[in-house]
Length: 375
Image (cartoon, rainbow, N blue to C red; front, side, top):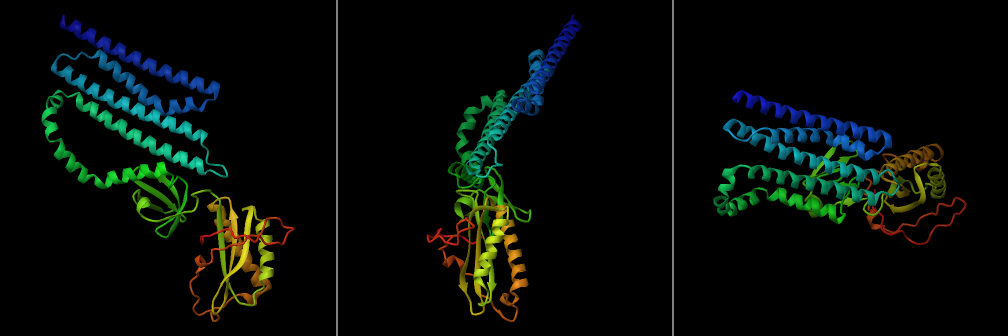
């Protein structure tokens, strides 16, 4: 008779497990078929993200309801299965959060000219997904602990020491909690977004990754600068794409006083109008400073984004130097002509007049564009 009971129990376990596997397999087949028929990216993402957690959840649930809970050995197995069931359910919920994020990113495309609002939304979605995933994980751990009877019985005694433990934990995790709150503040107040162009620690780069505790800035030479989120709410930094992705770049040249400024302006017009990197909005050439050895000529030109602005500046600088070397070599400084060129003070000259993009007009706009930061 006991042997028959064991055989019956094993048969029930095998039947439930096989049924769970069949249901999981059929679910995957149906989702893949529907994805191919409708070309729906949501179904593809659901299958890719959630198929394995769903299979494990179904098998664990089948074993949990088929394995008897009476007896020491089976009781331990039943407890392990319950813990696995809770953990797998939390894993599936986190995967579903990833699916929601992926679907949102399908609609929020960053490969557009003005993607400032899109990057803000993507940043907030990423931060909320990470925060929600952390809450789900904590809740799952709490549910696991509540499955142990001794912990529930000792709840009253543990409550008495919760104040001391909470104080100790708060002091130990003070920095982490401060970074988490700073990360939430940054995401919600639009101070910083993914793919923003920033200057931090005298380094130029793009925001590559944002978490609740730190920000990763990809520098121009492919290095990564890791900064805590509290850095961006306690330390001043430059955000070149705070209001728009468009960037006004500058090229600075030190030339002799005999350099032909009018011909330089004509050459700059030709360069920027022939370049596909210029956004057809603003450019200007001005003499912005003078030293005992030279005059300082600055060229400003606008581009759609920071990488285009960098390439445009390099193109303008290269062609201007070639133009001067070929047609006006006497305008270039030599090492003997400028033994100690002073540092630029361009911030003292905020007024910038801009030439309209109409190539048939030589008229200079009289109104200043306002303060322009040196790029």
